[in-house]
Length: 383
Image: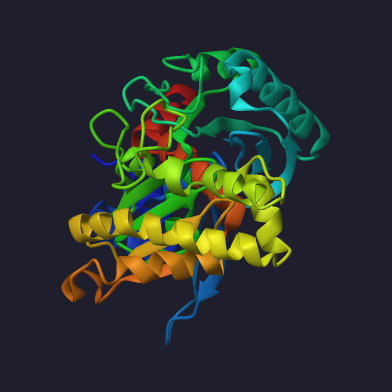
C-alpha cells in the first residue's frame, strides 16, 4: 500500500494538490490519506498554503512540498575554480562562495577546499537546521554505479577517486556525485524548460560535454559516458593534440581552450575559457569571431546528436555560451540535419548561466533523498 513517501512524491510531481486530489490519485480511503498527510505535515515535509475556492463550497487548501525542510550544499567544480552554494530544496541559492582551486591540483586539495567553504557557508547562514546532502558536479564522466570518476580526460589523479567518501567524512552528510553537464542539463530542464521531454545541454568551457535529459531524468549511458562529444574526432584537425592525449578531438578544435590559444596568437593573452568569456563579455570582436567559428565546428557534431535523439531543446552553456556561439552552432547544425529532425527544435543559450549545475544538483539530491522509498523508510524509523 502506498505510504506517506508515495503521497509526497505525488505532491512533488504535481507541484501542489488538495486532499481531494490526493484521494483521487491514490485511490486510498479518506482515513488513510488523512494519516499519510498528517505524517508529512508533522515531519515538516509539506505545508498547507493558499486556497482554491470551489463554487458553492468551502475553499480547499493546497498541499505543497516544503522547500525549507532542509538545505542542500552544492559544489560545481570547473577546471580552474569551484562554486560552493547553499540552496533550499527548490534549488534557490541562499548563499554561495567561489574558490579558486583547479582540478589539476588533484582531488584531495580540491575536496578539502570545498569542505572548508561548505562549513563556512553552513555556519554563517542563520536558520539552517538541517543539511539534506551534498551534491557535487565534476567535469568528467561519473560511473552511475559507483559515483566515482570514470577515466576523466581532463582530471588527472581523479580516476575512481571516492569523492563521496571524502566529502561525507568531512561534512557528515550523504553525498551525491554527478557529471557537470548532466547536472546543468537537469537544472535547465527543471527550471527553464519544465515542459521539455527531451533536452540536450551543450557545455562549452575548457572542454566540451553534453548532458541529456529524457522525460525529466538524466540519461548517463551504460557507465556514465553518454554525451562525451568533446572527444569525437573531427576531420581536418589531426594536427591538434587534445588534453586526453588523442589527436583531432572536438575539444582540441573548438573548446574554450582552443579559442584562448587562437586569441593568444593574435596578441590577446588568454589561457582559459574564463579568459575567453571575459573577452566576449567585453565585446571583443576577435573573441566573437573565433567563438562563432568554434560554434560552427561544434554544430557539426551536434547535428548528429540532434539526428539521433530528436530533442525538443538544445541549450548552450559554459563560459563560451553567447550569441556568437549560438550563431555558429545554428549555421552548421541546420544544414547538416534533415528538416524532419529540427522542425520542432529550439536552440538557445542557457538562461541560468553558471547556476544551472547548482539547480540541477539540488534537484538530484531531492530526487534521491526525498524519494518515496527514502521518505517511507525515514518515517518508519522515526515512528
